[in-house]
Image 1 (tube, rainbow, N blue to C red):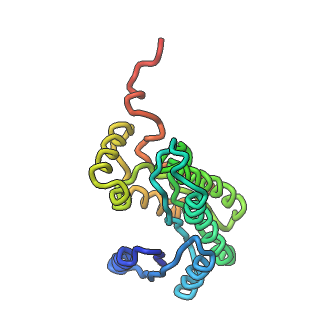
Image 2: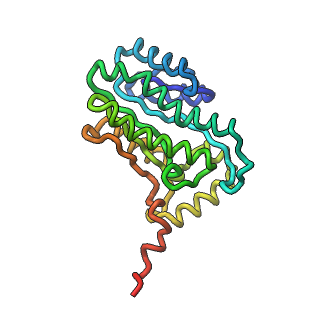
Image 3: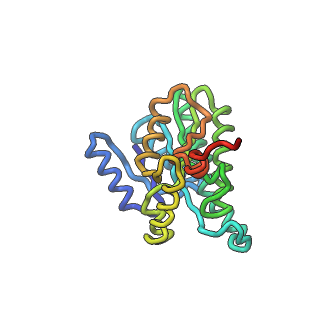
Length: 234
């Protein structure tokens, strides 16, 4: 396994150590997915280490927290940076590994998106738009790269992570979690393990699944949980 990071080296090395403790093997490589040269280097380093690439998880992402109605809160540079990481980065990584996967006759890609891409909400307009673009790209490349390469996407809802707490602060994030859990039919937020379970299934087990957007959000996209309990109109 190759673990990529751009800034969080300590966390990346912790993940590599956990992989090795579980009996696997892992290397850690720094790279910015918005750089095509870095993407190609990541693929080349992986091939040099193991001689093949069976799977790719596009999990790099960024955002800015700006109210959607605040049209002056984002400028063109903000959009360009968010799209560079959230959309162009996954495209460049897929391109970097595609020839190897095609040569061996099989491979799988899982993109990590968000329900923001289908619901038009989330941390900012630019973020939602980037995830919508990633979802569409999933469909395009699932067609283009078949039959050798499967391309799917996981669309999480609110995930309880350090990243969210750092961005919003513990108090605000706790409030957001409570609101989310109260409104979701499954009465819960999503954990990183929930996202990982869906990702690994698509990567390793879903041999006949491609071009799918798998929503993992405790049912949030269905609307407020209380609505399902109401009597239908007479």
